[in-house]
Image 1 (tube, rainbow over the protein chains, first blue to last red):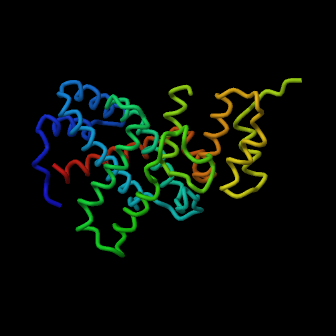
Image 2 (spheres, rainbow over the protein chains, first blue to last red):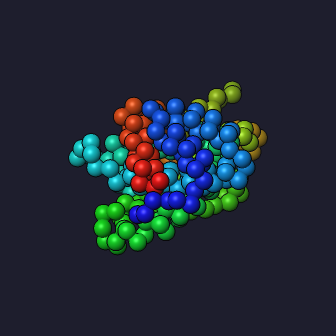
Image 3 (tube, each protein chain N blue to C red):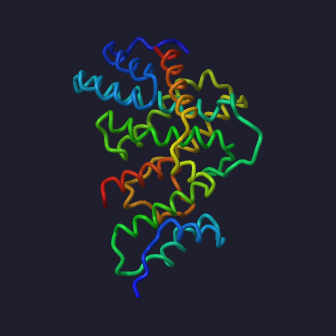
Length: 181
Length: 86
């Protein structure tokens, strides 16, 4: 995939400081600080790029085979995942709160950005991920896990029904809980 | 006699008592929510039903703190993604 050259260099600098941090907590801090130095238009660009990178990292989390051991899988939103994959996935899900906070976004708004980011990532990667390949399958799994766009948490279909919205449902529930409603 | 609501044990007993994924939310509400229950309790039941529908085996991972290795894996994935992108 060709390198992006259309993104503001100040935004890229913040992204690099976020991705190059030693750990997730340091990354969130770098993102928060870096965002403050950007103007509103740059902040929107930052949100879009971070959402796309988070979507890509979700695919990578699903795809990573290193460290996986044979064993009993858990059903996670219709997909069988090994314990190590579950742990990596939960790290991703839990980190979205920090990322949303660092970007100054409500978690529910951020979860919608993630969906958009996933669509952009798939559109950009699509030419490289041939159907029937492991990469293509991993991308589809990540999309399935992330779920579909839904309305506000309060207005969604009855909880626990088959219309679950994947990780979106979990993030939406957390956003609802955080608001104390 | 007032019975204190303990969401986690009550949700666990719902999960182990059977019933399909699609019934968890309905069953949870009928069993655990009384008309005079507050919004906080209603929300907790709903949240647990949502998590349960994600796969009963997954939400212990979600509730526990991910290990350092899993967090490091995620940060490494991001770094790789940024290197590919810019």
